[in-house]
Length: 287
Image (cartoon, rainbow, N blue to C red; front, side, top):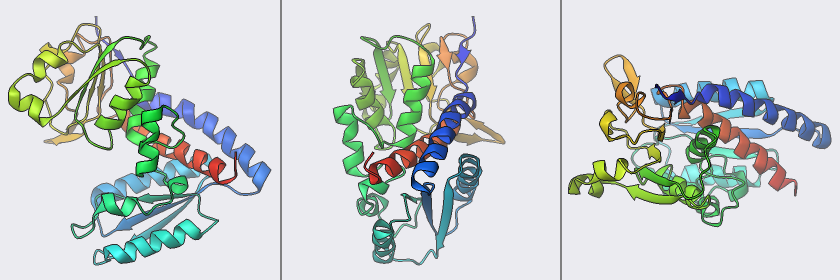
């Protein structure tokens, strides 16, 4: 029996409905809407597409979006100075630094200068640390999207065995922590796991499998445990197709639940950004 498809767009639409109602209520109470400043340094086609998605969602929700496009030659110190000015601007609710940035800019270092209460993407160390304590108000957008998709399966997470393939700060590490908070037994795999040749045996144990590597076909269909929840975060271009990290055509016949690529994690990630923005607005208003 084919797996149930976890439709990220459908789930995102449901969340946006409740966010819209909350934003309308906040606007009525405070006389202003959340405002997001999105900073782009240089030109990048992928960033342009992401900005288009942000424009569509912010317009739908009644959020003000301000886009600041800086020249590629902008120095790191100039970028930090801009962020510090935005931190002081009471009309700005959230700040987002679009990736990638030019090679002469250290994005991880720059993000540390964003006020944690204005950190729309949830990547400031103070916000990531909330994943440890299990009290996340503003958190890493993609990791939160993964958790929404897992929750949409409706399975009881308590005591389940999860395998997270990939240990990035954006997805793998925070997802592992968020699952631990749900009393899931978590194994985190990475490049060294693959080099030892033991990745298949770990994956085969997974009742919940999250893959975020960026390598098409990395996870073979025959590795998937029957009935598993499979969340594929990978986005890879193969010819004229966009595919994930999991062999979808084979995995869909074994898994219990699975995300499509595209249409799974992606639509929810922008929505989690907007949820972070609403939480940022409330934190700044003392709510």
